[in-house]
Length: 165
Ligand SMILES: [Zn+2]
Image 1 (cartoon, rainbow, N blue to C red):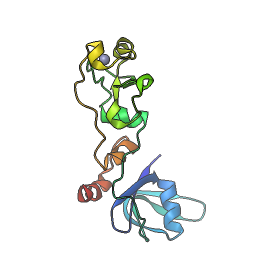
Image 2 (cartoon, helix red, strand yellow; image 1 turned 90 degrees about the vertical axis):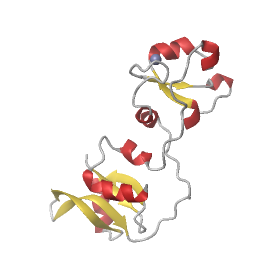
Image 3 (tube, rainbow, N blue to C red; image 1 turned 60 degrees about the vertical axis):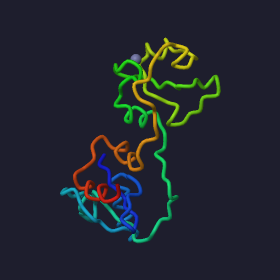
Image 4 (tube, rainbow, N blue to C red; image 1 turned 90 degrees about the horizontal axis):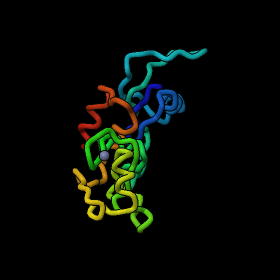
């Protein structure tokens, strides 16, 4: 499924939607196509360029600090799918301060981990388990949610992301 980048009327990147949803917004005259991906989508009655980037005709107010929503997939993406302790392929999420001891489910307290490190650490802190984190977990940069939403950022999106970062 192709995705489209949605820009605010101010050109600020807002979200990522399916190409089909983007077409709906254009047909409802809520948005205009800023860049298409060179392909055409056909339906019974019309043919329309498949939008890669659309811009809303109205301004959506967004909180000043947008935080990337934390999800399993986003944590793996941030940590390059590698274990924060040993560098092997990660297949689980570790809470640095264990949840059983009040550790929160926030960016700064979660790290991708391999199963064996996760089992070895159990409900201990890295210090107690004699394990070392290779990097301190942080919340991703503001626009990271865009790259987490797609496997690969389409070329057509890049000028708009560069402008915003
Ligand atoms: Zn590991």
